[in-house]
Amino acid sequence: MAKTRSKKPAKKSESKAKRFQKIRNLKKPFSGRSVKLHKSFKRSYREDYVRELEIPGVFAHIVETFKIIFKNWRLFLPFLILIVIANVFIVGIMSESTYHDFQDILDETSQSIAGGEIGNVGKAALLLLSTITTGGLKVNMSESETVFVIIIFLVVWLVTIFLLRHIMAGNKIKLRDGLYNAGSPIISTLMLALLVFFECIPIFLYIVVQSAAIQTGFLDTPFYALAFFIFAVLMFVISGYLLSSSLIALVAVTAPGLYPMKALDAASDLMASRRIKFILRIIALIILISIMFAVIMVPIILFDLWLKTFEWAQAIPLVPIALTTLTVFSEIYLTTYLYLYYRWMLDYEED
Image (tube, rainbow, N blue to C red; front, side, top):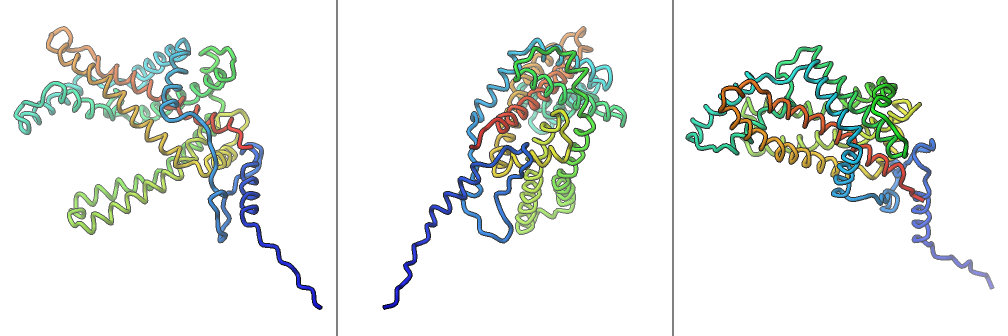
């Protein structure tokens, strides 16, 4: 009698568990091994691309960033004052005549549209919207002044990360150490910043197409408006996907001895299957900075409107200086916010 070969049922659940364990046991991105959660033309299972990341939530992230800055105010306050002074003397702040021009235009607009009943709070809010894009600096900057603005921002970025790295390592650090030693990765940072510029091209393309569409009345037709909306979403998704890795790479490249492409590969490994969470954190950061500008600058503008009723106070540039100071603080906060997220991802053990 012929023997029949017994076939054991395939244990699909065990194979999935093994794949999941393989993903969980990946080494850290800086160990030289790339994280590849997908393979082309092969089916991917949920456990193949889900990566846990147990870090503080968005609100805790915001609070922790404030705590680090204010706890080390002896470092960051002199640095803030130094950068504001550099902006004032190297680039220049918005002149009072330009600010008065904004006020006059707003007064004329309110008289023609709202019958002059726009109110002081509404006027302060509109003045903030009209001046916030300048950051308190000169409206018409020359090419050399624009270059200096970029250099100053790079100094803020590199020095803040240098200070944070030593603070989180428990080292005693002085501001002069950051000013003298933080500039070594500036070439690598500039190369990645150039890459970030190219990754923003879809957004720039959207801005150009939107301007042309408004001028030609292209958006008046509902079907074309829907098509343009889909185009806009696609452009922002492309740039957001690319920028999510490059922003973290800008933080990673400040590590000693790390080259730009190596930093970009490491950042891509860290961000694999985590981009949506990171984009949500960036949206929360934008909302927070907008709230900070509204809560702090609107009362200052209201006070300035009252102060300008006195003749002796006409030449005091209160709003431009306050706006420049808050802009520099926002740059320090943004850098600290991103660096914290990068360190939390880097220190998280996936094993």
